[in-house]
Length: 327
Image (tube, rainbow, N blue to C red; front, side, top):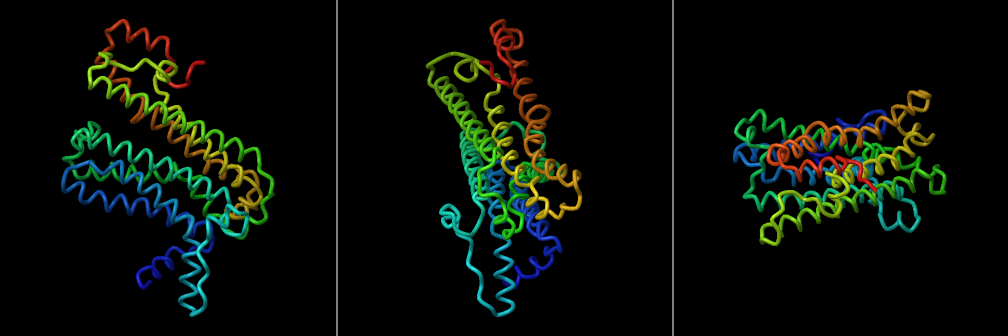
């Protein structure tokens, strides 16, 4: 605890909310910095995506348990009995501990991150550890380092509603209404629907790729299943699930309990707007990335270059929405 104590002391702000939020964000940049060093030396992006998933899970876990870690550290310094770690089972059974919304969203992020990380790691492994996105930057240490810190920013902004929810003082959750709110139901439905769509779309594409490798078809682009409804159904699912996470977290953050916990109770509409911004930045940033940076532009550009002159490709593009699935 000798090393941990000064770190906890340095990040112990007067506002409890920031004492959890700031270190959780800082952890994202710390992990990515540590992974960047050997990756830059080896000029390899093999563990880039996997480290992103690990960072999601680690930051989520820290935001859940950091308040208890601080309390245990303080108790050790004072020579008193350390408080017990919060029990997830106790939360699910309705006893005091973590709030069920914290557990649900933390689990939701962990499930998503584990699935995406293993999927992308399997894909890059099958491609001999290379990713075309890094062709022009893996040999440039500053650019490669920038990619890792960009990933830390991605993690921090996407996780913001979950980190903010987990950073609220635990004592305040007991004052929340016991009834399940509309934002709880809507948020969970959006998440389940979104991740289900993303998983189904990825599986359909993976099956199509494997069938092409075994010569079961000679198609150059996928136009079946969900991919006949949208040119990017997996991206639609991605935005939908993060919208669900933001909706559930936002319902708490804009409430009186959330405003008090964030230290914004006296800010009126500005406080609620801040809470909405912290929740909404997640799906907004994901949408920005997919539409303007690494998602749709790269995919569409690659296929347009290869098949843009073909009539069947142009017909598929004309009749299939780029994002929102047609009914």
